[in-house]
Amino acid sequence: MAKITASVYTSHVPAIGAALDLGKSAEPYWQPVFKGYEFSKQWMKENTPDVIFLVYNDHATAFSLEMIPTFAIGCAAEFEPADEGWGPRPVPKVIGHPELAAHIAQSVIQDDFDLTIVNKMDVDHGLTVPLSLMCGQPEAWPCPVIPFAVNVVQYPVPSGRRCYNLGKAIRKAVECFDQDLKVQIWGTGGMSHQLQGPRAGLINKAFDNAFLDRLIADPAGLSTLPHIDYVREAGSEGIELVMWLIARGAMSEDKAPTLRHRFYHVPASNTAVGHLILENN
Ligand code: DHB
Ligand code: FE
Image 1 (cartoon, rainbow, N blue to C red):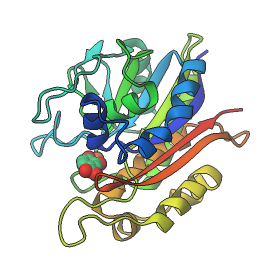
Image 2: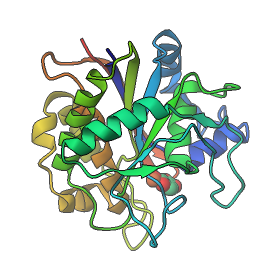
Image 3: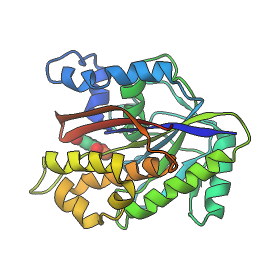
């Protein structure tokens, strides 16, 4: 049977992708950001899964105000990097896993979570920047990826509790897939940041570090945090953090996970960068 081996959490700042693509990662501004992912890239090489279930948000790229799925699962065979206004990022196309994606859709929808099935979709920085941070600049991504897009752009957005419970339903679905696959689940976006209005540039290190502490040790408690607290404390785009609860909810409840890596850095563009790796035991 398939199993979830580990979860990865990381911010997805578009300027990180640009820094890599334009060969600027050794510059003094970026060097400390990429240093935080050196361990992770080595860990990925040593712990390459068969499939990554990648929870991210689309930034009005594949979707728009015309159509706003709360949860969308990518069931296609492949996904092209999106053109977000400067041409598509020069990164490999994303190979999907239609069989596992369709199985997860079947199981999770029967568990009362309404997913939108997506059979054609380009993927933006929300998905490609985490892949770049964890895998560097390979010719091809190391394994198939199932894109799972969450609406955190246009209100109403799903609650942390719903995201956490959805993670549990995804775990159940993976564990009844009849192939011996090692699956990682990634939660991306965040940490504190606000891109517009009088509070643009907001960063809250105390909130971010408390969020990381609680995500590790008290995810059920953390899942009750209301939206307004994310927005007040972590800025309007800090709400992206609810996606981390999907990945955390998919981790085993029998035994606490092992913390393999923790990293936090300010600034990267307008965003605080946070990153965790948790392994199931
Ligand atoms: C930035 C961060 C984001 O999450 C995003 O989607 C776009 C821009 C930033 O910090 O610049
Ligand atoms: Fe974002």
